[in-house]
Image (cartoon, rainbow, N blue to C red):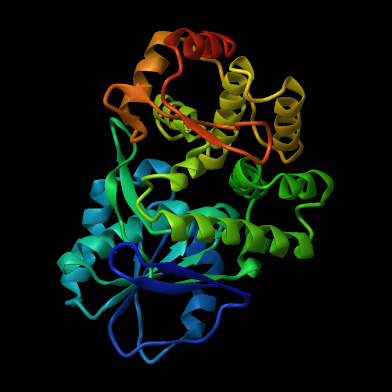
Length: 349
């Protein structure tokens, strides 16, 4: 299956997202594979066997969100300079969302920009992170606060890579699928409720439908000035959770799962979502092994962290919420502080 990306509002960009077995990749320029030891041990030989024309440089970086930093990006760039890469060279992002974000960001910086290709190996990166050109790193102030919009030349999604994915990582990817369904497609949400999401047939359906939603949104709004922000449903809360726990307790999808539950509690308080629908979302997340609760020890501190998020603007926090329940969305930046803090209090503040 091929899902096209066509961006025309700024500089025209077109590339394909290919969902199938990894094809032969033929290069006539220097190529570097950026990966981590976990993915390298499991799948690197398969990728090397698919590459023709060159012997790629393999750059391994540590595995984990806590290493998604400028120091790691500088290490990647140093390896490229040491090996005399140039503006015609290509980077391959081979791993999950962390690898994809850092590789794309490195590609955007090296000699003001070189090509990169996404080859995602986790469910989260296959259904979401590899599509759309968001790249970047975290810092002590928050998640993805340093970065750029930089589109890949292609995305190759091979579901076979998921065969070795740990259950926890797989569940983290399901969270991003649920996110898209709640925001955009009630029928898709109902499919997720009734289906075995680990059967090969349903995995392919889930990836294809999620990628189609993401591609449609990115085609309308590459730089997140409007509808693309809706894909951050749950993330306003999740980014604070990740920051508070030093990016070490929760996988990104796990934090997003909790963040969606928090967002839904706020939506229920505002009359945008019924209690019944909020429970349906929570139950679907729990059914797929995802956490749905988090103890907020200091409500005021948690609230202040919202203002470090990219979705805050002119002293106002934007929350992405269901508008009329599952399958609809609204971006609200006029919510009373008392409603926000009352929602946070529900989680133990």
